[in-house]
Length: 294
Image (tube, rainbow, N blue to C red):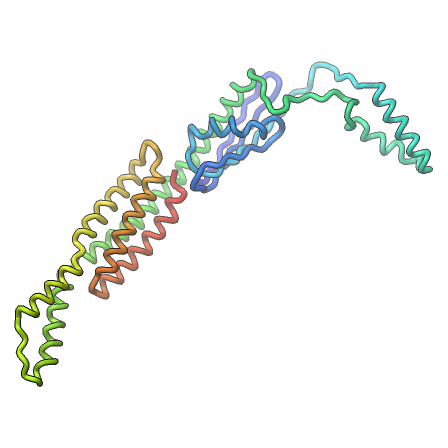
């Protein structure tokens, strides 16, 4: 599910801002962006995020604004002088002494002149509580955004679910007339075929043929199971599940699809086949939506 959350907190030496964005994904994928050392701590962030989010591609952007340091930074004068001498010699050899002032402006970025401060791939222990608080707040805002989207998605799912139940209701209404219609057709065909030839057809033969057709097209069990799955689907959408409703919904929809396919293959009526096609189309819409449900 998509969402956005942001939180910020100021400490004695810095202000930490964390933005969390999520987009749809069947699995959990966490990417951390920002200044060092945060990208190297992606595994730690994922461990904390996994407690809140189970599915989705999550992008975490960490921004730190530090206060001006209170201590002076000492430059290595000997190294700086060596660089200047080499630069001056190079400009003199190339007869381009006018370039010296411009090139000298970048000397401070060369290694060994200014002391390098950083934590590498670690974060001081005293900084973790601040990161935890800000990340938790950002995740809370993200979840609020995702819940708003979830409510809208639930409404859409139930609307599609209601349309599918209406199609299933039409199938139930049509079923009693299927066998009667078949009986009428087969009697008329037999009467037309043997009328001119004067051949008598045993009523038992017709009854047996009609009974075979009725048994072959009996979908009462499929309808019962499909109704039960549809009820379970509505309950999951309304109440969710402790371990997340997304994967359970996928399983229920898979079972619903199996029953609808069997219903379509056994249907002996054009109107029923049309209703089955509509149910398949509705189920495909549901299947696409629940890929985003956690």
